[in-house]
Structures are given as structure tokens and as C-alpha cells.
Image (cartoon, rainbow, N blue to C red; front, side, top):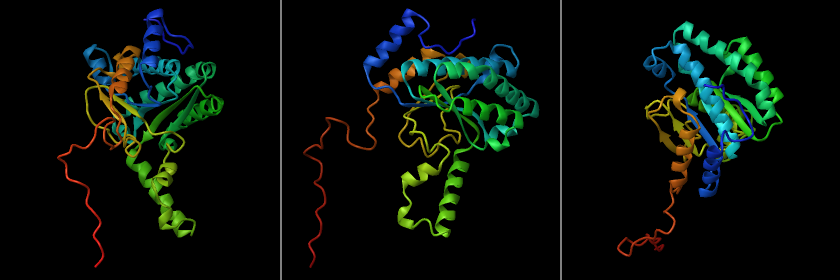
Length: 277
């Protein structure tokens, strides 16, 4: 299989037609978030070591990043390494960190050429120094790119992110910089590591599990969710097209009554305010 690279054009006329059909069919998600699950199970089914699953997963990252850029989806966030992942065997953690360094180094020029900005979420201070250095250099080099923002959640915990925001609210309140009535969802959102990003409108999780696993807990309030049995190394652009197609079929009500739906005559009337005695 040829190594997929970021390019400005679809892979084939059929691919171009699929992208055009999606663009004409309805609104595209503006922020896709993906829980990339199933690398190890994919490798086991293939009779290969777990590290091979992680390497093949990188190919999916390349293909999905390329496809989002081509479709005009401006934000892609990938759950790359959670705080819980530090509990994995040392050899696997080391292999993942080495793969991260290698991948970021190899992809930097492609990101630059294709207008992709790289940023990170999470407590990256926990990462090895070589990882931090490569990520910081790539983030600095791509900071002015505007075609697609690719955010990697690394050593990330949604709960820890919320705790950090709460601590900052307390600090500001104690310093007299913040009154209780100033605290609202906009303030809290801005204090999270995702503060510069719009909330995801489409979450995809591969690998068959149906849970958030501590990922973007605040930000997922109104995200449409798609769970697939397919393992991450086998998830490519065709599966992304299916997910976007499904997203376009959703009626996104945000708690409101569906468009065109009215209260039936048999429903009780709204309560009237009591007249003061």
C-alpha cells in the first residue's frame, strides 16, 4: 500500500465526486473529534505485534487529516494519548512516544505545505523532552496555517482540564478579579485547553466501544456521536464520508422542538403566573 501524504487534491475522480456530493448534500461538521481506538486489537487479528497496529494507525491519521482538509472541515481533534494510557506497559509507552516523535518530525513539512496548523491539548509537561521539543517546534512552524487546525490530545484528561479551569476561577475570585455573577459557561469554556476551538459537532469513536473515556467532557455537550466497530487502523476516508453523511442526516435541535413540529392541541397550555393577592 503506498504511503498516504497530505495533498491538496482528492485521490481519484471517484474520491473527488464523493467529496463534492457531501459538500452539496448539506452542512459539513466544523469540528470533528475522534477517539482512535482499536490499534492493538487490529494488530492481534492480523497476527502482528501491537506496535504494528500503532504504526498503521498513523496512516489513518494521515488519511483522515488529508480528507478533512480537502472537505473544508476546519478543525480535527484526535485523542492521541490519555492520562490513563500512562498505566500501559513501559515498553508500549516508550514505543508510542518514539512513534510520536518520528511522526511529528516526518510530517512537519507536509503540514506546512498543506496549510495545517498543529496544536496540542493536555498536560504535555508529562511527555518526554524529545516529544515536547518536536511538538513545540511543529506548533511554532505551523502557527500561521489556517486551512485546518489539527489538535492532538496528549496526556489528556477531560476531568483534569475541568479541575484546572475551576482552580483558575477560584484563584481569580480570591484575587478580587472575578465576581460570582461573572462565572458562566463562556468563561469556563475559555479556561479549558480547548478554549480557542469551537465545540466539536461530530464525535467518532472507532473500535466498537460506546463511551467518551474522559475525552472533551465539557465540549461534547451537543456533539453528534457515531460509534463504529471498525478498528482505527482500518478507518480511512470512505468511513469518514459515511460518518459525515450520517451527521448530515441528524436533526440537530440543541434541546429545542424539531423544525416544523408544533405542540399538539391536546397538550396542556403553559402555566399562567399567579395573580398577587
